[in-house]
Length: 159
Image (tube, rainbow, N blue to C red):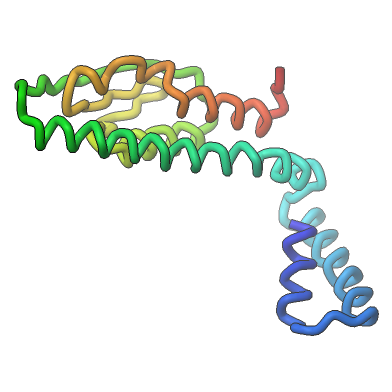
């Protein structure tokens, strides 16, 4: 937040002089102290956010790659109609405790073509898959492992 506030200050001023930089640092620190005191923000949350950024970027890159792979698989199933697809409903459990991570997992599954998250009850996900091959390994997917790492960093339970 501190870096973001300072960057916004520099962008809005559209000029970089020594006075603007010094005044920006002072204003940014005052706003940051206000956020820490009255809005339940802390330097610890700031550090955690910066540590999460690489994992969040990696997650989005993996999500894009998985969407591309699922699109190709769906294209093969639909265009090369050589066999009957076998839709399947799969239930699996994760160890994710953070509501944000659970929601991101459910939305990532739904964004991936051929799968739709039907229900999430605590840690149990119910997913409809267009074909039984898409259901394999869902509980051990790359989404779950990355979100588990993100959750550990976010809660301070790194291993």
